[in-house]
Image (tube, rainbow, N blue to C red; front, side):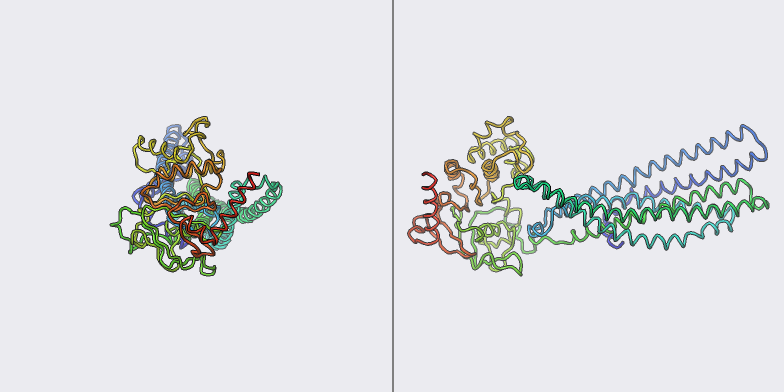
Length: 585
């Protein structure tokens, strides 16, 4: 239950609407409890003398009071339930904003399905508490108080007799509430596993089909789904026992009241109208008793979900602006320096980079080459502050990257990652993704120029809707080379003083590669450019080539200098020459 206290700030935001809703609950219940009194008076009056005017009077009064109560019921939902939707909206947006700020390390260690479960099931469970649970808690409490007060005014002994089941119900609800909380937590956790598996399968559907693993994946998912089914079944068993027991206790109480009250009517201690009103009030108590169990169920589910959400909100972004941030830095020139930089992803893992010392002058083009897994991508990730260095420091324009506002650092850097990611949108919107708050005319101009540089024009001419073609989820309708060139076009359109190309030409043929590199030369003038590649043909024209081996800088120089050195670079060069000759045979 303590986990729900975190919702205080959301309730405070809409307190006037919530209090207004509580007022409508008060007015609705105070009018509805008046109906049995009208029935009492009507029965007693009509028993003495039957008359059509009296019957019509009481009928109209009952209809009128019920109508007024119904209007207040409508207003309750328009205030409290609508407010719960607004809080749900705020909570979901806050969660999304928090997720956007979390570092890459969080996403490496957290399954996508788990995050999706937080954003859907958990927030929905909390919304059910904010709306129905809160509304019916106040509703049932006020109805219970008003009803009990009127029951006591009719007969004190009967009222005390009607309250006998409630202590037993409290113990029963407490016991089952704990059970429901534990079961719902397990259900939500397993839903995360199920969602992760579904997301993973749909993303990797090509591999599944290529390796003929459909049947295996179906069986695996069926097992996970069956576990989820069993956990829900256990909760249903608790629910199915919960409500019948409540009805049994309340029903037994009503039978007892009918018997004892009937004796009082026979003895003349109660009128028939009073007994009728009392039994009707007992009916009014049935709803609070049933709702009490339902509210407990919703509250326990919400507490379990909010606890999971609180744990997520408690995760602090590793990479963020801090008190060291110098907000006077508004732009970058592009000089990059690594000073004694070492890095590892976690304390229990080996160093990926060790004692890197490198200075890249502003406006120059540097290339990085090396075997797979040697640390090339990690090196450029440190420039963008996707991670912070373990030892040493990275500087841009003489400023430690930790002092540069993150927005400035990333706004001034155009990045083409090794793993191409495209959104399920038009080709144009993917290319213009980094262009924010620019006039449409300027966006179109930037996109057209980026398309030309990335040598996408011939491909776009074959698309049915040109730049407005929807490319599908993750760009599924495009070839590997088209995806890479779209990613390059996106970086070019954005501009920025630093350009990072991380092995983004691996899926294009050598002729297309030459054309793109030729187009990029003009674009890279005045920009600090870092090109990562396995191909010598991609890096040979760089001002300096850095050879990374086992996390250290093994060689550095121009293409000619490194060939003459006859080291790692020269061996890669000779190997690629041989491969090219074999292809031509």
